[in-house]
Length: 306
Image 1 (cartoon, rainbow, N blue to C red):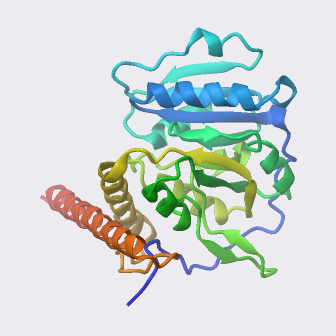
Image 2: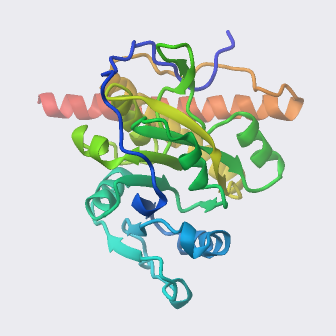
Image 3: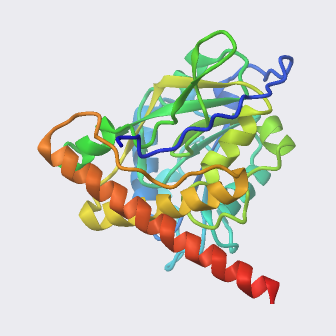
């Protein structure tokens, strides 16, 4: 059987028709970036942001949340010489969910733009969201691969970091959830649904869970013109670690949403021999992570019942 490697939720959304957001303005956007042990990524992100954005296009602030890095993350003097407020806060609680929640707690903007420390902004990062503004409470930005190596091209062709589509009441394609490598969320709605689930302590599934809850609270929209570039230069080791983590996230989401999310074999979007091989490896790593998390859940459940 050939099925996509990512899951599809068949639950019908119960979206309140009257739940609409405030209009998006750049000066009401707080960018939040959780980071652990990636000083180079933070330096590169801030360098690129200041290179691609003029003062009149600055957001309200950028908040870096250091999530137990060793050594700790620091801000370079060259990034603090601009009028753009760049803040560094520390989150000692484990996991990107907790780090992002703390970032939102410290944010002053009405809108929260989530990026990752292994992403680079483009000049359209903010403008793309303004273009997509239609009163939704959350927007799924676009993620493209930074590199042009075979693995990077595979990630992009598979749209690994783009949410799956579903149809809204008018038949338009909308995202089922959000992926926080690049997504914009109305802060009021974020707070109303309780933010990220901090019980998900890994970088896998916590953003999907948030997006699914947001989709039951209001409308989500694609913002394909908001582009961030993801650095996939960690090779096959990073490939295996990433998809094992996603497989674990699938099992955690399965527990929360009570739906079958066991990975299945699938064919790649572009059917070349190298892509078929990588799709098989992706499936095996996803399945390995899923099975490992399943065992952990059973073990924890058994210990709790004693």
